[in-house]
Length: 263
Figure 1 (cartoon, helix red, strand yellow):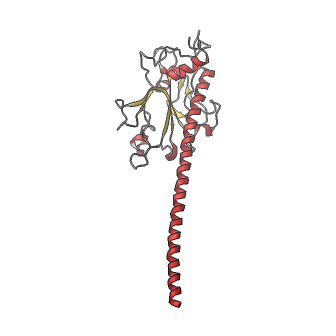
Figure 2 (cartoon, rainbow, N blue to C red):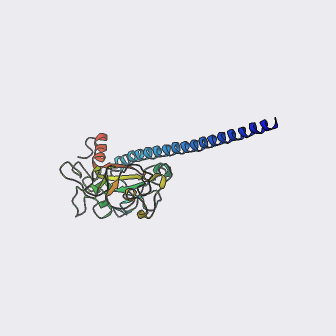
Figure 3 (cartoon, helix red, strand yellow):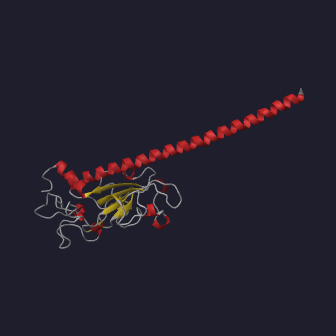
């Protein structure tokens, strides 16, 4: 009888071990599922923030007749040197836009990148300049209109891009299917005067060279961005979210608001 009880006790210990293993797997799986759900919610938050920022930029343009320059010192206000933007890329001037810091951050709390037409920071801004000509896309960021257009934006329907003429200083976004991001790559967007980037989970580093080639394109200061496929693989990690704003969209917003606004 004593031997039979020992065998029964041993069986219970084995069974208990199996149950504990199963519980452990369920707990780990549950935590993993919760993490995936939290990340998914944060990515959705990033996308929503980008859409809200695009609308805020267009509203700012309708009220002020120009788009703001980037914030280069993270104080919530645009930075200019005279009429020119202090830099072509920085963060969003959320105070100027009537927003708060949370509104211009991604789901992980990283400030969203705000890049504007590069010529707005290199002397190509405002039509009254002797050079370049009046039609350049940098004029969307000019805050000093000239007479007789004092009450009108410093751009009109002829401001680039147009169907006949491409803009200069604008940005292109490489396709997820591209094996590398170059000027000859397939693009999902071209001639974009504004690019917004949510860096998401891995944030933004001050050293772009440590990033994967896909994320490096969204960190450097050239005129190419890359809307690559999401990946968590080492060497090709990518989880950025990108939105853009073209001259066509800017002009359409004015025409929708007032058909005579750009005459």
